[in-house]
Image (cartoon, rainbow, N blue to C red):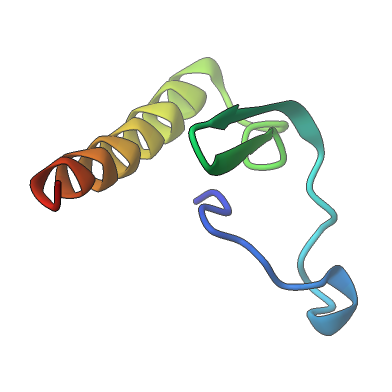
Length: 69
């Protein structure tokens, strides 16, 4: 899927593409970078499913964060 939490240097892993960052923003102390590498050659339906899964991962993280307050 996508590179959630991706921190490896491209030179360390030969088969990972350089992310094509299309949007970057910050929420509190978290910097978020959106790359479209996973969607570049996908159908609209596949893109919708990728985004749905990404939203699920973020919602799960945010819910867990709220529980630790």
